Length: 423
Image 1 (cartoon, helix red, strand yellow):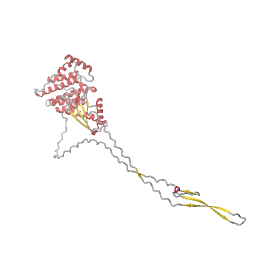
Image 2 (cartoon, one colour):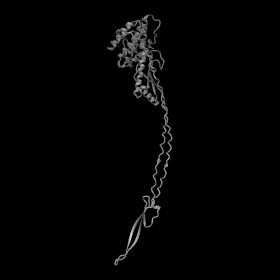
Image 3 (cartoon, helix red, strand yellow):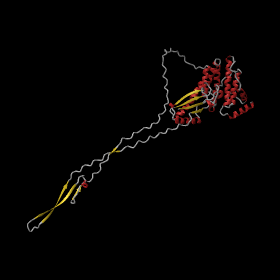
Image 4 (cartoon, one colour):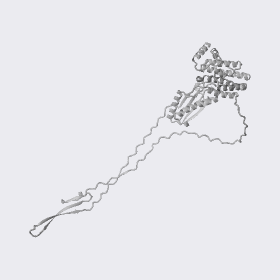
């Protein structure tokens, strides 16, 4: 087993990039790490706050050594945490690392002073919370010193450190204010319950009936008048004009008169042409043909409206996150694209977005981290054109794990956001 540990430590020196070297760490110290990780540190039978505090420190630094060795594959840094744990279990007084030994200053100095003063004043009263705060501080300055190559986000660790310092006994200085008597309580009725939005399915398509147009009586003009001359007999010496509807005859007569004059004037024959117009009785008017009713064509048969087939797409999607992170990877954005496409295909009214975490860290911190993850996914969905009022966003913290684990365990499958399309 020691030979395997040496090989693992040597490999860690070559493969680890960006994880720094902590005070007290060494290659030789890596030989004690593997057997130390399997050591059981007692939680019962301890007498006095001093033993409780030392045992709590031993457990916290053992947990940091396990993370450095097993998850970050940094056996050299794991040796520094293992040495601190063993020293605490021997009853030695150990102190948090000063920022200067890791090349830090500025805000790290103020955090260090806050941690140091809180531990000195409260370790005897709240040993477990104070031990947790001290280990979190050392983990915080370790990640802060690694800069862009940090294995965890220092801001996330600092937020949990502030919670543990408050549990240990840290309290900021406050201005004493003379309390003003509170007014008599006034009953305020509870607000009415929020209305329940029920999903109403869209109505079935209705084919509207268009009545046929009113019947149109077509006007048939009367026939052209018949030439009146065709109804009368026209003599040979007459002509007929029947364009007006009446037969008008024009006839020519030849009258011979003899005029006798004195000799030597001979007898003359004078020919007269007399024209007379005969207007016969007007012909009876021709009655117009009766109007003909033309029936309208029958209305067209209604055309059935095709009903689209239901889409065959998943209703549930899962997006995973790194440890202590809530930023979206390229794979996460692809899953969001698929979920938005399914939401539109189903024409669904709502999309449930729920954030989850593993059990590492406090429940209060995990609730905030789960909410940040859910908000990040909701923002990406909204940026793809989905109305924000259709998104129901919530955080389940560590209360609904995909994989059931003990408290304080990192589990990648539990660091997720679940998307459910509600039909």
